[in-house]
Image 1 (tube, helix red, strand yellow):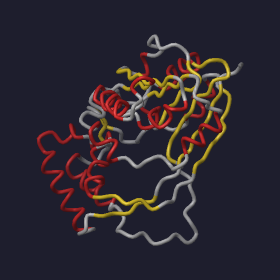
Image 2 (cartoon, rainbow, N blue to C red; image 1 turned 45 degrees about the horizontal axis):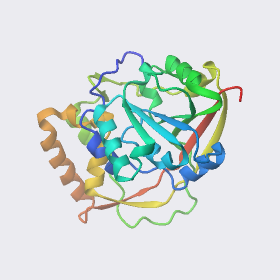
Image 3 (cartoon, rainbow, N blue to C red; image 1 turned 30 degrees about the horizontal axis):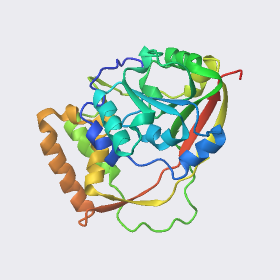
Image 4 (cartoon, rainbow, N blue to C red; image 1 turned 90 degrees about the vertical axis):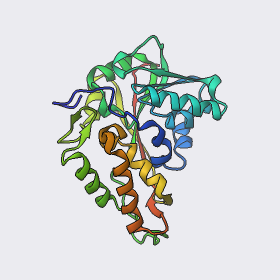
Amino acid sequence: MVEGWKWDDTLFAGAAPYYARGRLPYAPGLADALAGALRLDGTGRLLDVGCGPGTLALGLADRFAETVGLDADAAMVAEAARSAARAGLAGRTRWVHARAEQLPYGLGTFDIIAFAQSFHWMDREPVAATARDMLRPGGTLVHLADWKSEPLPADPAPLPYPPVPQPAIDALVRRHLGPVRRAGRGVLPHGTPGGESRVYARAGLLGPERLVVPGGQALERDADQVVAGVLSLSSSAPHLFGTGLPAFEAELRALLREFSPSGRFSVRQPGSEAVLWRRPGG
């Protein structure tokens, strides 16, 4: 858990409807790369801890006999269940509204347990130890995040539209919410913690093995997607603005029109890095 910060259930309040539309996708080919590295064959069980609206879990559900997604935000779980139904996956997925700290929650054991850009919000030491115990012997814990050290292309092709004006967006958020990053009812002056490899190692897991899927492709984003991306973040979740949310969104859209009158933007697809940790045995 972040020192000096206490989790509360408003962390992503109001963000669920924006998440799937606003967040950038994982790198193309990630599901196939994980399937190869983990020898997924349509059997076994996956637990996605902090699943959000099911982004990773739904992308992998056809590689398992059963997929369980768990999240502390009820609206995220509801979004995941709706997406699973639309994709015809309701029969092989299960969605649980609970905190990671409540595991094992009677869910049994799993072949794969994933933390996809979620572990930093948890009480990491006990959660890692519980996840180890919930893995079958020889099972794998997958820690997934954007590839932070991805090298820039030596001669990248020009982007067809202006880039998303992130510094200007960040300044607008600070003007509305204050200079210190917000998170639920608290603040994160120093951001979220790193060093997860040490936590997993102390839990008795073996690793790390790194699997990287490069990005770099040019993605087109419209203004609605950019706005959704901002409102999907814990640091600018809708509840933080209170009655000022309409004014913030109006200013954000005006800012975006200044940078791109067409309402079109280009971003580089981030790469994805999966760090694999094995439970001994098996």
